[in-house]
Length: 475
Ligand code: NAP
Image (spheres, helix red, strand yellow):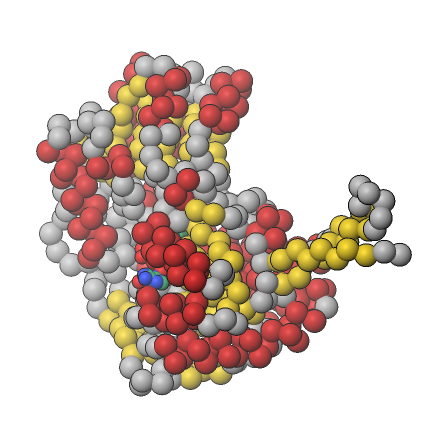
């Protein structure tokens, strides 16, 4: 497998000659080393993207779409191989990795179809003096920065629409999981993406590298997925050259269960919303609010299902919950759980870090969590379900909205009117109504409040990579 930088269609070493290690989260052992891109490599990648830009923008949308469609076919053919790689470097269970690869490939298929749907507008000026003509053009060179939790899907969710719109890109993957991004660079080249259109730049000095690119006036967009903390830094840096930004940031999803809900469905939905990717998802249910009369039944049934999950190395076919990605993540989850226990919560399952090798944390259910606990305010990013009770709809909405985040919210109710009413009242970019999964390449994914700016997927995802140009014309 290639582990160099991918710049201008070629595999190249870092100009410094430096490399960094990639670890297996199940053991902490080194599984590979990758070229460590620096600032001058980043500028070389921008050179390549800028040089390839005009020809790619002028390529027929149908041709751009067909290249993306080919990339979808290749990813689908190699899904098992890619899933193993995702699981190896990220730690997630193979079943989750397979799900991710299918989801990731679907962004190429969806945006292959969207490439030919870039439209414009013509209308009469109200004065009658002229026509208003609007055309949509590619933004230009884009810097794409992705996290480690979905190393394949977060990359394709950006590369797909960028290429469909006619943009060229430099992708800076997370340094915990660069191997999947490099494998996808190979697939895109094989699918017919011309040299320089997609460049991939792993780096251990992400801050410096991204900042160097944002200072380059040829870079016209940054699309970032990651923590709100880093998103704020990048928004400030993008302000310098007034660079177009899309931000997919952290979440703190509430999962609300009303007493009139189908409890079987709510428990099944909770298992998906909480345990997909072992809880390492921005969409993961972070806080459970359950109406008092059904709280003990819901908590018991959720705990039973979570306790039955098989924990082990992600690459083992039997595993349902893999290790977390690294030591820092385990320490953070452990700290949040300890804090909640100190404040009076009880762990009905799990609740403490196991001894031994690897970055494991057991599925954990906490009841009696004190309002205001850090575990309800911060993103857990692990297999922990804190449960809080409520007494009426207004209280549920108030507690669900009591956060600076607003990515996704889940709610379960048997009353359709209540479902829609509460969906409208929840401050979130997405709502799962009687459903524990919202992600879909055909839907606009994104958050409100401090969870982000912009949308990925759907037709909206394409618009993020286009600029409207208005031409005032007489004819
Ligand atoms: P992160 O620490 O913010 O890192 C994300 C990416 O930014 C990585 O590539 C990282 O590189 C890079 N980075 C770090 N510091 C930077 C800086 N100063 N300037 C430029 N780039 C920098 O987030 P993470 O821990 O990888 O991912 C987890 C977070 O992502 C969670 O908050 C999760 O909610 C969020 N997320 C959001 C969505 C969404 O769609 N809203 C989806 C998935 C994940 P290094 O790896 O080298 O540090």
